[in-house]
Image (cartoon, rainbow, N blue to C red):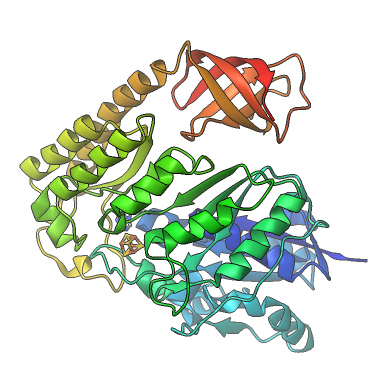
Length: 446
Ligand code: 5AD
Ligand code: SF4
């Protein structure tokens, strides 16, 4: 009989994607479960991008300690960015943990488990190399998570070479490496065979895809190749670094009907002085030029962003420039964070840190302003007919369906038919919620 594996995933979509890869790697011996109590193997996939998610790791792993007493053979492992960052330290602090696998080492999970079954000594693998290439793992029909999906993530590149001064990613994910285009295409074709209609291409910096590798297409060319896949209807990607977003790329977004009209374009801060200290390599004027081009060529484009408040040395005036940028760009949604010190980063050693209460105050102001903007933007959808790709039931009710517009806005809708998962439908938008829209079904398009 197969054993059970429970994976708890924190952090970004890249981590979600890595957790799915683990399930594929373990498929011969383990089936996934949603209940840690019945698991024979528990894995916590961790995030260290900010202080808060990192703290969660210890309490999360701690919750499973009592289960070890009940089940002798239970294995507990930690993977992801905290695993990469802390390595052996995690075993020192949490001695009942059996393995710690870094962001490139988790591909060895099968061998690690075999070894632990022979000899229960904890295993820590955290090597990071420039030459690293992940193996090709095709989605499996035997895994429920894979076959039930209409939308899927595909990692096209890993790591980051940018070294923004606040960011730990280059240290825990290593240097940028792009996956071979043939493998990406093969993986997506397989997904489409399993019913996927929309893919989100993942990378810390997708716009620099293929630039370091000889003979690889660049990102716009990769998008063209992917869009030739029959049966794939929609393509999204994240994250775009503003400095690498070219006009050619914007044109391809505008012209290729499969590419969705949404871009996540992290601004981080609105003041040129702070952007410089963040090592972001663009000015606010350059950022606004790209936004203007996006809006000119793709009038219905939805732009979302990440904002950090209270970066070391951020004055009230600097902060107000961030607020100004929100008013000028008018983002659909923002993800906003209080600056926190991260290990290895240069900003950690900057003086003039901003007090916690002040960061809190600025965060609230940013979020309040954005709330109004999001509401105004969502209100503009009311009365419009929108194309929506149906992902399944709405999270709140089994009598309503849920899908997304090309602009990545969630739409919950009622419909005389509930068997529309995976179909492209037309919806009349009737109401705007805080982070979603409501509507009714008009017709099925595909
Ligand atoms: N403090 C606060 N926010 C951070 N981010 C990254 N590093 C930090 C940090 N040290 C935010 C950035 C990034 C998002 C994923 O997390 O906004 O885009
Ligand atoms: Fe971090 Fe900057 Fe790289 Fe994004 S581009 S992962 S913020 S270093």
